[in-house]
Image (tube, rainbow, N blue to C red):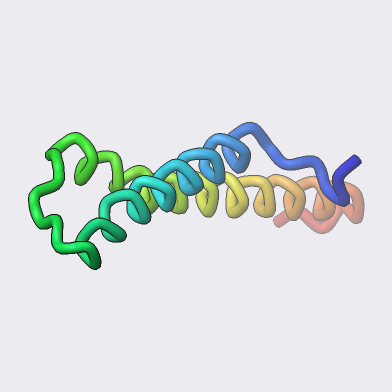
Length: 79
């Protein structure tokens, strides 16, 4: 059991980030061996890392704001 329940957006974002980092490693490591022509699809797959990061951060901010609204509703301090 996890410490806090992750929202589906966070899970999807982290999965995309992990896939993107894996593609970045697959794309960059052959350069050290002298290979310079990588396929376009692999270069485009590397964009999954920043996209996943943005999705996960957006989901975390959204969850935090929802928790803040619930806390304000409990203390009846809503403006």
